[in-house]
Structure formats: structure tokens, C-alpha cells
Length: 237
Image 1 (cartoon, rainbow, N blue to C red):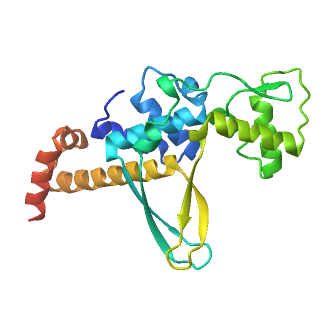
Image 2: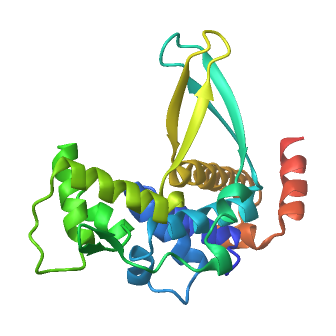
Image 3: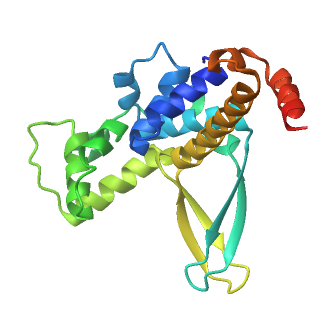
């Protein structure tokens, strides 16, 4: 796994700042896995993608996540925390992804990928989106593409069991009104927010030091973080 320099991180942020979160997730992984093609990453099952992002988050920013949410009943703000190592280390035994097809009523399906989600991104109707997603994951091309609600539900349940890291659900409890609700943890959005924060901090440091000393961006980024911090202290003194 490749280690990103400050210049690499800025390039990553610039490439992804106007991209969809699906693309951002793949851009992040592609930056640290140069030997894996973008197309291959797009075909990773969602759980494998999410475990990779969680592992990167642990490596770059530490394992502890602090977040907040608002109670949907009373509006009270709730802070919560979790350990990203739970997600990064929760893959199948031996590190292999679930490979056996999912079989429902004699029809075989593979696990959804980022490419599948991108294909249904513009579908506003949730039911139609579910049907299209199932069609994309169908391995038996000759099987009829008509799905009952019961089949869609069973296929979704089987996929969730086979790839539990594809979606991380948090159960939250309001300390004010005791209401309990569930929320989906968007790993990509959390990680991208932290990447953007680092990028903007770097741009601020470049601006301050370039204004003070006339150095180029490349010259400033070539300094070690400790030496850069010392120069910033002297400029701001």
C-alpha cells in the first residue's frame, strides 16, 4: 500500500473535489493501490471497498471516529464514537471476499459493486432502483428479469448476510427523550471530509509561507511537517 505525500494528498483532493462520492471512494483507493486498476476497484464488492477505506482511515487519521447526530424526535444533539478497526478487520476469514453466488429460487447473483451503484444512480424510484440493481447482479442472463417484492426482499437479505460490511448501520439512543433510531455510517463521506480538512490546512500553510518567503508550492511541500511548523511559528510570531 503506497504512502501518500502531502503533494499526493493535495492532488487527490483536487481530483475528487467535484466528483460524486462513489468516484471519491475509488479515487482514494486508487491513490494508495497503484497496482490495482480503476476498473478492478469499481468491481470490488462494496464490503471490500469499505474495509479498504476503513483501513486507510486508521492509517491516516487513527482508529477513533467521533461524530454527531440530531435526534429525529426531539432534535437533541448526540455525540457518538466508534473504532474503525472494527470495520477494517471484519472481513471474511483469511481476508478473502465472499465468492459463492447467492442463489434465490434457482437464480444466481453476485454481490453489488460500485459500478452497479453508479448504473442506478439516476433512478429516483427506490423500487425500480432495487430491481435494476438485482438485474445488474444477476449471473444467469437467460433468467426472466421480473422480480416480486418477496424475491427482492430475500435477495437483499442474502446479499446483506454475504457482505455485511457493504452497509454499516449504527443504532443511536437519545439521552434526552430515550428515542432509538438507526443511521447509516457513510465511510466515504467521513474520510473525504478529513482529507479535505488536511488539504485546506496544507493550502493555508503554503499561502502563508509563500507570502512570507516567496517559496514555491513544491519547495514548501518538500519541507518536513516539523520544519514547516517551525517556519509558520516564526511567520506568525
